[in-house]
Length: 80
Image 1: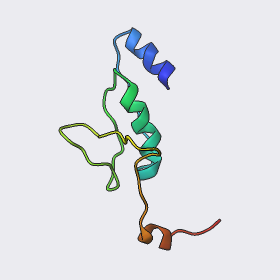
Image 2: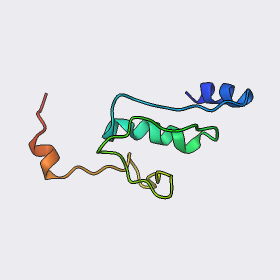
Image 3: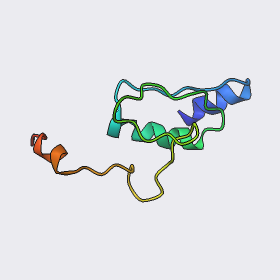
């Protein structure tokens, strides 16, 4: 993805990462978006989206993707 972003930047174009998933699955896209200077939007945010601040999404500074799961999440989870 970074290679494609660099190719797009070389011809003056932006990239818009998107995914059919939200929440935890959006984590890798947030990391990608944090390092791409030619970002042209971010799509597919839903109810589980991170908090926007002044048109930006803060990137977690701690290890991991920045999501914590409470007891309700684990209660509705199923071991596979």
